[in-house]
Each structure stands twice: as structure tokens, then as C-alpha cells.
Length: 375
Image (cartoon, rainbow, N blue to C red; front, side, top):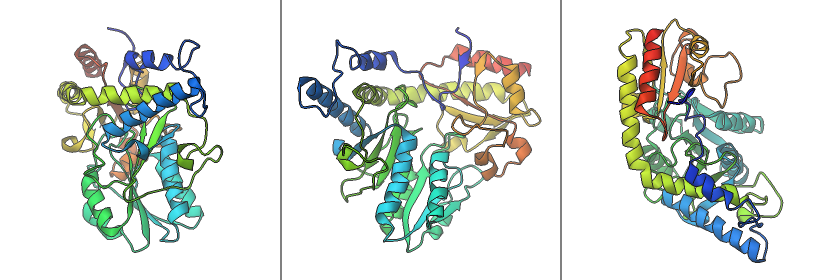
């Protein structure tokens, strides 16, 4: 067993060796390193590879390849979705609805849009982290143009009922954006049956490289966004910039592999989580955050009340896990996600996140449980 043990898959994943092999072919002189926009044979080979990857990403979520717009990651996709919709649809209204437990790339966008005259409703989740659908329905107004809700929460792992939310927004003619950075490739997503209008994805949460992502934009009925980046007019004019074939091909391969192994990996993760929870629950002094019955098995957020999270980090250097989220662990402030669930600052300061993945083993789980028991 290799130390330190990596249990921070929600922050990022190692790139699958099969993805690395595919990616390298589009970097060196022995491969297809051309600019996909070039008309010669090198460019055409790169373009074909990009087209294949676009189809692979689309297939995973049951969409059309033309509905996939490449971005640098889910953060850019979220920015493009929120700011792009706000700029293009503001004549219909200037009200946006989101959840207090969203990713910073959504919340910060909303705060920026408020400075531009938009009105944003930040809903408080129920104590288990799930959206109250009745309260959500009542928050919608005649001037609401966009709803943005994360699928799997990156800190506590709860899975929102995006199908139910989508049915509500579709009936009201309101655009619905889903941050699927944590869910694409891990749990089922079907754009054919769920009326989601915009959906953000990235590669590095599902064994692809960092720095590449995509935004799904529904084609029927047509959804468009105003671009954030202007230039050569790539990606249907909505995201200019030279495409990176090596990263795009890698994302396509990662998504294809995820589609093949999704069911088996979910089963394995359930086994790993059950073993982990069984181990730590032997301590009477443990509090699980979030709804375990409606959550992704790869993420467990919990507290040992009275034991600050930093104490755990200092005592277990041989285990890599998170205090809060890697995306906004900038200071000593307790998690805003946990505070939105009703936890006190003191309890939130004790929270840690363990996240499991494709390369996690039973032996690693048992080792970690034993170390936690020693505490």
C-alpha cells in the first residue's frame, strides 16, 4: 500500500493511464499536433479528433455533438452560462434563482451580476442539504430568466433532484443551468428526458486532465449565450480561442471510459463508503453532514465534534483529505455550505471531507479507519 493515501477525489482525480496514452499522441511530432482550425492535413487530423471527443462527451449525457461547447473547465462553463444568459436574455427579466450551497464560480457570478442590476434569490437548503421544491417554486417570478442548481454538491455529496427542478422551470419557460462538475461521468445524466438548458462539465473530476471542460447548450428549443471571450469565433462564436486537441481528446476518452464503467464503479464506491462509515460510526462522537440516502457514495463529509479539522490534518499527514472544498479553502472561515445547513461555526470548523474514487482500495479504507480510531 502506497503512502500517503489519496482520499480527495472530489478535489481532483489522477489521470487514468489510458487517457494519458491517448493524450500524448496529440502533443508530439509523432502525432496529430496541428491546429484544428488549419486547412492542411495536420489541422484536419486534429479536427477529426476533436469531433470524435465532442461526440463522446455528448453521448455520455445523451446530447447532440453540436450542443457541446469546449471551455477551460467547469468554472469557465459556469461563468459562460450565467453571465452569457444574463447578457442575452435580460430583456425578458433580470431575476436569477440559485442555492446558498452552490460552487463559488456560481455564487461569485451571481454577486457580480447583482452589481450590474440583476436580482438574485439565494435559497437556503433543508438541513440535509437538499432543495425544498415548494420553497423553490414559490421563489420563481415573472421576471425570472435563469435557475442555477448544482447536481452533486462538492462538499457534502448530496444529489439534487434535477429532474423535478427541470420540470418546474420548463413549465414556467425559465432557463435551467446545472453545475455537473461532480456528476458527469459518475451518475446518469440524460438531456433527452430531462429539460436542462445548460450544463457545466469538466475532465479532471473524472480521470481526465485539468484545464478542459465543456458547456452543454440545448439546441431544441435553441439556447445561446453571449460570449465572454472574443476572437477567432471558434465554438459557434461563443468561446473563441485555439482548441487544445490533446486536452479535448483526453476529456473525450475519460468520458467514454466513465460511461463504460459507471455502474460498476458506483457499486464499488458504495462498498467503500459503507465500510468507511461502519468503521467511523463505532465512535459515538461522529456527525455525518448531508443526506446519506440521496448522496453520491464517493463523498463523505463528517465531524468529530470538539476536534478541529486542522487537528486531523496535522495528526494524519499520511492521508490526503480535505478541510472544506479545495476550490475555496482560502482561509480559516468555516464552510459556508455547512453553515447553510444550520451547523454552528464551531461544528463547521470540525468538518472534513473524505472522497473516494477509481483507484481507492479496501486496504486503504481499513488503514484510514484504524488511524481515525486511534484518535
